[in-house]
Image 1 (tube, rainbow, N blue to C red):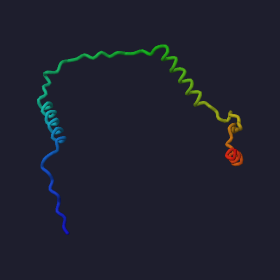
Image 2 (cartoon, helix red, strand yellow):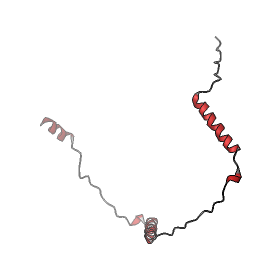
Image 3 (cartoon, rainbow, N blue to C red):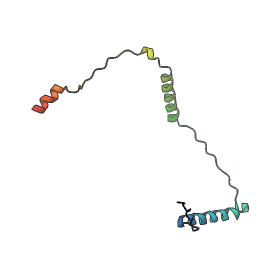
Image 4 (cartoon, rainbow, N blue to C red):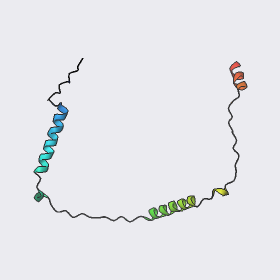
Length: 99
């Protein structure tokens, strides 16, 4: 059996029509743009100086980073870990079920 290709619709869905009309409006605005309607603007550059608190905070952060970078792991002592809340054994569970 041979398959016939489906005919494609020549009509665009509403969504595409709206997008197309928006595109046309945008292109029309770009084509009709006049540079002579622009005005010169002077921008003001504001320079913010850090506060004393900002400077102190940055110094503390820098010291912390330097401390981490210069850390010597060979100075650590070995520590034993202990479980303070052990899980109950099977016998304890069976006794609780029986009670």
